[in-house]
Length: 206
Image 1: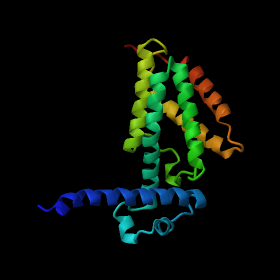
Image 2: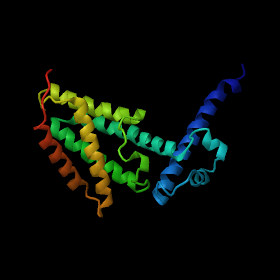
Image 3: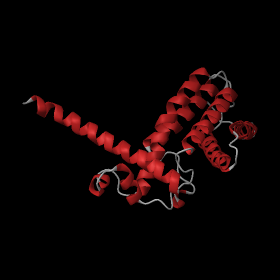
Image 4: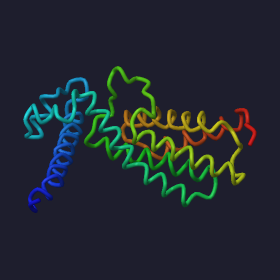
């Protein structure tokens, strides 16, 4: 087998990764400039310099591109959560740091990427992509850890992780609507709301 034949699959894979990233970068810019509803696949393709056929090798619609962008953001945010978990001393410190980090992350993303979700995703599931699933599992793992150490009441982990993510997501979108963006005020609201609610929900055995 020639050296070229050995190297070729790796080169093809690099090209695929580069093309996929080019599409995501273009979509992030287009959605940020035009908004999700107004943007079209053609707008995204024009920004990439790829052919129409090349685009459809990776994504079938702008909905799929949007989902891929959300998944990409979730993958990049998960290590931040993991680092915060490693430093946390109790439930409140992890919750506060995690919510603040999330709001800072989306505020930064918002500079180039529209905050508006697709109309059919008014109430999306948080675990519908691998990246989002990983974020959910990271939050759940951190909550389980602080409960096992006796630093938080033992409540239903799935419900708690889902509720915290939902609250942070919705408050985060409201935060982005306001000018100027106030991360600290949004963080304080979420943390106080969640802490006050946790003390009132039923505990579980174990």
